[in-house]
Amino acid sequence: MQLSSERLDRVRHRVTPILTLFHPELEFITVFVDSTREYLGVVAQLDDRPLLLKFSWIDFISRPDKELQEEVFAQLKQKLGPGAEGAR
Image (cartoon, rainbow, N blue to C red; front, top):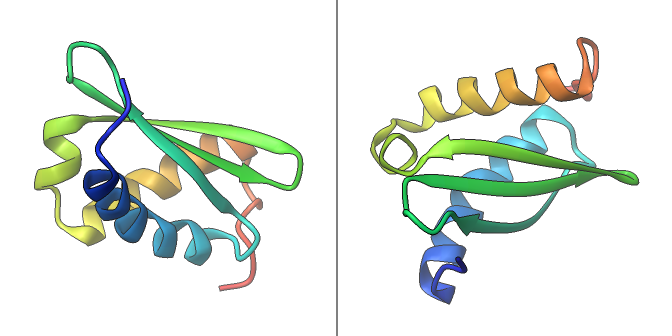
């Protein structure tokens, strides 16, 4: 299920700085919600490697930015391996 352009922009503006902080070349591609509206998927890409980050929709919108950053970093480290972080 696709989000409205307004919600897509809100998610993009919240996630993009976190992705860039993890690795400067990590790009936000898109976001979608499952049909039950329970989970949010963020698609990002590093070089030629696509990545899917999964969040509970309620957790995503209610978490403070610092907690969201910790969750994003944890998922990226799991998918890309330790040492994947760019210069911070």
